[in-house]
Image (cartoon, helix red, strand yellow):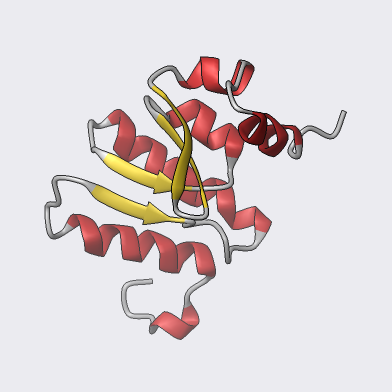
Length: 115
């Protein structure tokens, strides 16, 4: 699809192109802000797999996401931020998801639990 115009690409393809363009600058840190927010649900996994492969290759990233399963899988540090303030932080993502310390983080994480 190298000859296609941006309007001819799917949302997931556009996101992958944007990530590659950012990587061409050889950043020390890649900032990704809600990269799946505007995607069709079927495209979300493709984009998240690209980011996961970057993490496995050793890229340093700051990722803003509401994709909690993805955050749990990829993070080595969690900052839970609300209204521009850090509410909770953890260097142990598994502990953050299993036993958040603040009531606000607990409420947020419980909003994703449909059991």
